[in-house]
Image 1 (cartoon, rainbow, N blue to C red):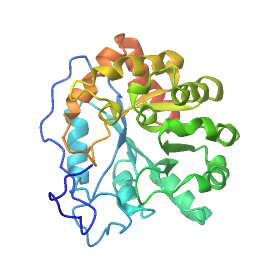
Image 2 (image 1 turned 180 degrees about the horizontal axis):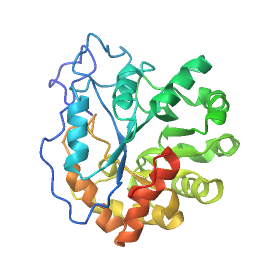
Image 3 (image 1 turned 120 degrees about the vertical axis):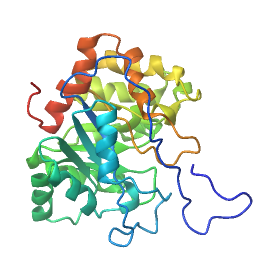
Image 4 (image 1 turned 90 degrees about the horizontal axis):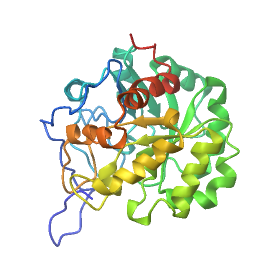
Length: 301
């Protein structure tokens, strides 16, 4: 959660901490073409880009310039922007940022089932390659829309991305297995690692990855860990996912790390890959080759 005044009910969604300006240096050689597949941008002008009233939190500005600086500091050549929940289905700012960096950025949008074909085609031209279902924060689109949206985007070659608690997966598997597009699960399932890799939720996640061609974002360790801020309890969890399907694993920073009471170090999060994937060739697949296939980047030189 974001901090709120002690003893006072919030009058509006609470203001979040901002990201740290400095970050740890890399402990491994970040390969050329590396991609951060999960981050958000928030415009500085809240009047031109208003936040939806049903949001869960209020982020500080995280504009394009700060985002591109973060990519540079972490050694990333490419990035994938995910429409942040506080904008609801107003993708304008994200799309503007994508259009200014067509070779190096891609996006994941949020739309209602009533979206027009023309709007989807325009988003594709801007670099969008997926749609997000979000049932954890206000402003998202829920499970009731996933079949309709999946069929709408199948012809575009997009995927569906899910911000959800993987403990919900067992009851949703019959629906998810029938989707006509691949699925991508955020933040390693966004469930507590304390539940263990033998839990029903984790097993369902592995099933989708192993048997149905789904993908997982190795991101948000701080959202599922009980050990701030080395997140050592996430190591076996991440390694089990990588072992399940190394060619469908992606890495993301989750910058600017919204809805947290303690701010994390983005460079330290990237450095966790050295523990999760000690082999350099495996890290290159996670950082370079896998995102190239999913998001349609040109092959790295």
